[in-house]
Image 1: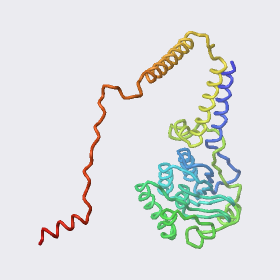
Image 2: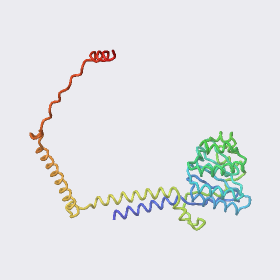
Image 3: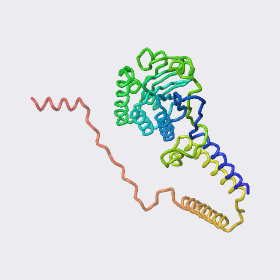
Length: 321
């Protein structure tokens, strides 16, 4: 019973966590002027669904623009490339806002930030650190970053340094280097800059479960998220700990037959080792430590004395004369 309760509690915890990984729409009153998509987590396959839904919402409303509120430092290569391709091929006006204060767009999110027609950074934010380890991925993403910078009129050299040198730019540095277009103090200033009333927004974010994700692969995309993998690992670790604890509480007694057989085998092995040790000691004591009498002693070697050096020299002189 306790084990079943623990498993049920783990499943409830998993479902509760899943509630925070999907898409929700917050529709404000008034005519829609902009669709805001908030990316504040890892860029994964769920991000593709978020972006696709935002694209569809913008396309269904004349004159609407897309605003990507970006605050992320992790991501995967393939989802990032697919998100950029979908944004570039839409032909929509896309504004990327790195914010709020203290936010950052590092690693793969830096590539996503460069995909916007307008890049706005909040005061106290940063962008960069887009270097990769795989040479093939570096070459591919370098071309992507270079083409995005050229298409949106940004400094190519400063942009490429985020990959080659893993440089991180603050909002002031990005503005001075020609990477971002504006630096602001908060999101309200961005809406004023775009001449959009806060009541004319559709906000798309990850905070509630939605069963109508497009593409028919909602469940597969959901379980492919970075957070879901971490949650499943934690759940699996909890289940293993519960099973180990249950096994220890219900362990069999030591007088059972398998354990008795194992103990007898260990006793036999110990007795065999002790017998081998005793026999070895006995053999060592029986071994004679003296030379037998029947082996003849070596004879004494008489050494021939060597003549002095002076005598040899005289003998040589006589022979020469």
